[in-house]
Picture (cartoon, rainbow, N blue to C red):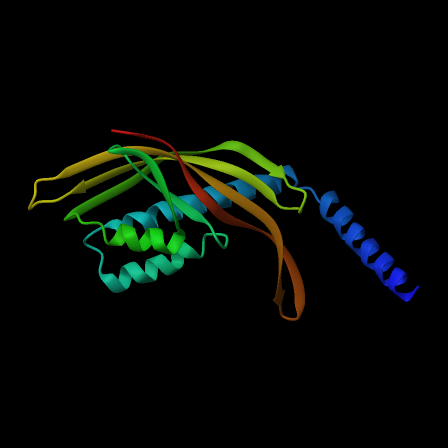
Length: 192
Protein backbone atom coordinates (compact mmCIF):
# COMPACT_ATOMS: atom_id res chain seq x y z
CA UNK A 1 0.00 0.00 0.00
CA UNK A 2 2.82 2.39 0.93
CA UNK A 3 4.51 1.72 -2.43
CA UNK A 4 1.25 2.49 -4.26
CA UNK A 5 0.97 5.85 -2.48
CA UNK A 6 4.57 6.74 -3.34
CA UNK A 7 4.01 5.68 -6.95
CA UNK A 8 0.80 7.75 -7.12
CA UNK A 9 2.53 10.83 -5.66
CA UNK A 10 5.43 10.41 -8.08
CA UNK A 11 3.12 10.19 -11.08
CA UNK A 12 1.12 13.18 -9.81
CA UNK A 13 4.26 15.31 -9.48
CA UNK A 14 5.49 14.29 -12.93
CA UNK A 15 2.13 15.05 -14.56
CA UNK A 16 1.89 18.38 -12.72
CA UNK A 17 5.39 19.33 -13.87
CA UNK A 18 4.54 18.29 -17.41
CA UNK A 19 1.33 20.35 -17.44
CA UNK A 20 3.21 23.36 -16.03
CA UNK A 21 5.99 22.99 -18.59
CA UNK A 22 3.51 22.66 -21.43
CA UNK A 23 1.44 25.65 -20.33
CA UNK A 24 4.39 28.05 -20.56
CA UNK A 25 4.44 29.97 -23.82
CA UNK A 26 6.75 32.61 -25.20
CA UNK A 27 5.25 36.04 -25.79
CA UNK A 28 5.86 37.64 -29.22
CA UNK A 29 8.19 40.25 -27.67
CA UNK A 30 10.17 37.54 -25.83
CA UNK A 31 10.29 35.43 -29.00
CA UNK A 32 11.77 38.34 -30.92
CA UNK A 33 14.45 38.75 -28.23
CA UNK A 34 15.19 35.00 -28.35
CA UNK A 35 15.43 35.08 -32.16
CA UNK A 36 17.90 37.96 -31.92
CA UNK A 37 19.97 36.09 -29.33
CA UNK A 38 20.00 32.94 -31.49
CA UNK A 39 21.16 34.86 -34.56
CA UNK A 40 23.77 36.67 -32.46
CA UNK A 41 25.16 33.35 -31.22
CA UNK A 42 25.33 32.05 -34.79
CA UNK A 43 27.20 35.21 -35.84
CA UNK A 44 29.58 34.75 -32.88
CA UNK A 45 30.23 31.19 -34.03
CA UNK A 46 31.00 32.50 -37.51
CA UNK A 47 33.62 34.89 -36.08
CA UNK A 48 35.12 32.16 -33.89
CA UNK A 49 35.43 29.75 -36.83
CA UNK A 50 37.17 32.42 -38.92
CA UNK A 51 39.66 33.06 -36.09
CA UNK A 52 40.31 29.37 -35.37
CA UNK A 53 40.77 28.56 -39.06
CA UNK A 54 43.09 31.49 -39.80
CA UNK A 55 46.76 30.54 -40.03
CA UNK A 56 47.62 33.96 -38.60
CA UNK A 57 46.00 33.14 -35.25
CA UNK A 58 48.43 32.18 -32.49
CA UNK A 59 47.94 28.69 -30.99
CA UNK A 60 47.10 30.04 -27.51
CA UNK A 61 44.55 32.48 -28.95
CA UNK A 62 42.96 29.75 -31.08
CA UNK A 63 42.58 27.55 -27.97
CA UNK A 64 41.00 30.41 -26.03
CA UNK A 65 38.56 31.04 -28.88
CA UNK A 66 37.76 27.29 -29.11
CA UNK A 67 36.79 27.35 -25.43
CA UNK A 68 34.49 30.33 -26.03
CA UNK A 69 32.97 28.73 -29.13
CA UNK A 70 32.27 25.46 -27.30
CA UNK A 71 30.19 27.38 -24.74
CA UNK A 72 27.69 28.22 -27.49
CA UNK A 73 26.75 24.55 -27.98
CA UNK A 74 24.50 22.05 -26.25
CA UNK A 75 26.35 18.97 -24.95
CA UNK A 76 27.06 16.34 -27.60
CA UNK A 77 26.56 18.67 -30.59
CA UNK A 78 28.29 17.77 -33.83
CA UNK A 79 29.47 19.75 -36.85
CA UNK A 80 29.39 18.50 -40.43
CA UNK A 81 32.32 18.65 -42.84
CA UNK A 82 32.00 18.21 -46.58
CA UNK A 83 34.07 18.61 -49.73
CA UNK A 84 33.36 19.02 -53.43
CA UNK A 85 35.77 16.10 -53.97
CA UNK A 86 33.51 13.53 -52.28
CA UNK A 87 29.83 13.01 -51.60
CA UNK A 88 30.50 11.89 -48.02
CA UNK A 89 29.74 14.14 -45.07
CA UNK A 90 31.70 13.57 -41.87
CA UNK A 91 30.43 14.68 -38.46
CA UNK A 92 32.68 15.54 -35.52
CA UNK A 93 32.08 16.61 -31.95
CA UNK A 94 32.43 20.38 -31.70
CA UNK A 95 35.89 20.46 -30.07
CA UNK A 96 37.28 17.90 -32.52
CA UNK A 97 35.91 19.93 -35.42
CA UNK A 98 37.73 23.03 -34.16
CA UNK A 99 40.98 21.09 -33.66
CA UNK A 100 40.78 19.72 -37.21
CA UNK A 101 39.99 23.20 -38.55
CA UNK A 102 43.04 24.64 -36.81
CA UNK A 103 45.26 21.87 -38.21
CA UNK A 104 44.24 22.21 -41.88
CA UNK A 105 47.26 21.93 -44.15
CA UNK A 106 46.97 25.29 -45.90
CA UNK A 107 49.13 28.42 -45.67
CA UNK A 108 46.04 30.62 -45.80
CA UNK A 109 42.47 29.84 -44.80
CA UNK A 110 39.54 32.20 -45.19
CA UNK A 111 36.08 31.18 -43.92
CA UNK A 112 33.09 33.48 -44.24
CA UNK A 113 29.43 32.94 -43.39
CA UNK A 114 26.65 34.83 -45.11
CA UNK A 115 22.89 34.81 -45.66
CA UNK A 116 22.20 33.79 -42.05
CA UNK A 117 18.46 33.34 -41.49
CA UNK A 118 15.79 31.30 -39.74
CA UNK A 119 14.31 28.61 -41.96
CA UNK A 120 11.99 27.19 -39.33
CA UNK A 121 10.17 28.96 -36.55
CA UNK A 122 10.63 27.85 -32.95
CA UNK A 123 8.46 24.83 -32.18
CA UNK A 124 7.63 23.66 -28.68
CA UNK A 125 8.79 20.13 -27.85
CA UNK A 126 7.14 17.73 -25.35
CA UNK A 127 10.01 18.34 -22.89
CA UNK A 128 9.21 22.09 -22.77
CA UNK A 129 12.13 23.22 -24.92
CA UNK A 130 11.71 25.07 -28.16
CA UNK A 131 13.63 23.99 -31.25
CA UNK A 132 14.28 25.87 -34.48
CA UNK A 133 16.71 25.82 -37.39
CA UNK A 134 18.95 28.58 -38.71
CA UNK A 135 20.48 28.20 -42.16
CA UNK A 136 23.78 29.71 -43.25
CA UNK A 137 26.05 29.60 -46.26
CA UNK A 138 29.77 29.09 -45.61
CA UNK A 139 32.44 30.06 -48.12
CA UNK A 140 35.72 28.22 -47.53
CA UNK A 141 38.98 29.12 -49.25
CA UNK A 142 42.26 27.33 -48.54
CA UNK A 143 45.54 28.14 -50.28
CA UNK A 144 48.86 26.32 -50.12
CA UNK A 145 51.68 28.51 -51.45
CA UNK A 146 54.24 25.70 -51.74
CA UNK A 147 52.06 23.32 -53.77
CA UNK A 148 49.99 26.00 -55.45
CA UNK A 149 46.89 24.16 -54.25
CA UNK A 150 43.83 26.37 -54.07
CA UNK A 151 40.58 24.87 -52.75
CA UNK A 152 37.23 26.68 -52.60
CA UNK A 153 33.71 25.57 -51.81
CA UNK A 154 30.39 26.91 -50.62
CA UNK A 155 28.39 24.87 -48.13
CA UNK A 156 24.81 25.34 -47.01
CA UNK A 157 24.42 24.33 -43.37
CA UNK A 158 21.46 24.01 -41.02
CA UNK A 159 22.10 24.78 -37.35
CA UNK A 160 19.67 23.41 -34.77
CA UNK A 161 18.72 25.99 -32.13
CA UNK A 162 17.54 24.93 -28.65
CA UNK A 163 15.69 27.38 -26.41
CA UNK A 164 14.92 26.41 -22.84
CA UNK A 165 14.06 28.06 -19.57
CA UNK A 166 16.87 28.02 -17.02
CA UNK A 167 17.38 29.30 -13.51
CA UNK A 168 20.21 31.08 -11.76
CA UNK A 169 20.77 32.45 -8.27
CA UNK A 170 21.40 36.18 -7.92
CA UNK A 171 21.71 37.69 -4.44
CA UNK A 172 19.85 34.72 -2.96
CA UNK A 173 16.94 35.00 -5.39
CA UNK A 174 16.11 32.49 -8.09
CA UNK A 175 15.86 34.16 -11.49
CA UNK A 176 14.40 32.37 -14.51
CA UNK A 177 15.53 33.18 -18.03
CA UNK A 178 15.35 31.77 -21.56
CA UNK A 179 18.68 30.52 -22.89
CA UNK A 180 19.69 29.67 -26.45
CA UNK A 181 22.12 26.86 -27.23
CA UNK A 182 23.35 25.73 -30.63
CA UNK A 183 22.91 22.09 -31.58
CA UNK A 184 24.12 20.02 -34.52
CA UNK A 185 25.41 21.82 -37.60
CA UNK A 186 24.23 19.72 -40.55
CA UNK A 187 25.57 20.02 -44.10
CA UNK A 188 22.72 20.18 -46.60
CA UNK A 189 24.55 21.11 -49.81
CA UNK A 190 28.14 21.68 -51.03
CA UNK A 191 29.15 23.30 -54.32
CA UNK A 192 32.22 24.83 -55.95
